[in-house]
Length: 297
Ligand code: PPS
Image (cartoon, rainbow, N blue to C red; front, top):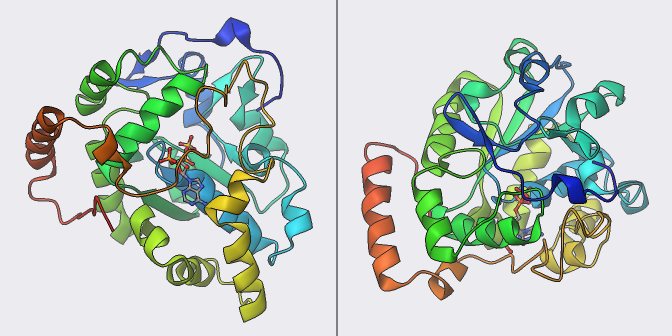
């Protein structure tokens, strides 16, 4: 991603690819995305938007750099962990950036599992998937749609929630995303984490990540990483809070990227009627799945 004025790219209509909405620009680059050439040492962070991507990305970069905080301040999070499929000419070309990057590369994706480039499976890359409960994601995504000017118009909260429930937001249905990746996890080198678990016990989840990445770090380094990836520290770190992007791309006066960082904020936004409708839809779509979420901790 580039720190430049992108007024010409603001509020474009989403484009539909194989029934799923994406940002304009990705349609023209679709073949390039699908043919992405992975390297065996690539480490992927896969998420549905607003599920803890930046949080876990920062942890991953800190882990592979042995907790060296100065090294981790070398660049903004979006250049350290590159959003592969974000291709918007004049603003971002994730594939081109990754092609130039030395190994080991940290790769961010929001693609649903069935649209993830096959090269990653063929090269047996390590994948970390992070999932967050659907209600908090809805709220976080709504604020993000307002502040991120590359998103289509969010409409009112009621309108946005309706689009979210029916999967008519960028990157498609939350249900399909979390279930799709969950079903894949036993066939592949994948660590499936939950935002709520990280919040409840960050050390326990960080240790899982360290083990998965086959690193051996001292207690002192682990504590340092925990400190540097806390919400408060990341919110005040320009290299992790997205304030290095031009305001024409993200307007933090509308809502900061590092907004609340909590579980249960949905209760401050859902009306009783919206919650009831959401629960009905949720039961229908999650019936039979072994995947369970917590909406409060
Ligand atoms: S994106 O745009 O999809 O990459 O967004 P993503 O990083 O997945 O999600 C952003 C939400 O994660 C919260 N966040 C954190 N929570 C707790 N601790 C830490 N360190 C942290 N870092 C980011 C961020 O505040 C967004 O959630 P909300 O609920 O909007 O605050």
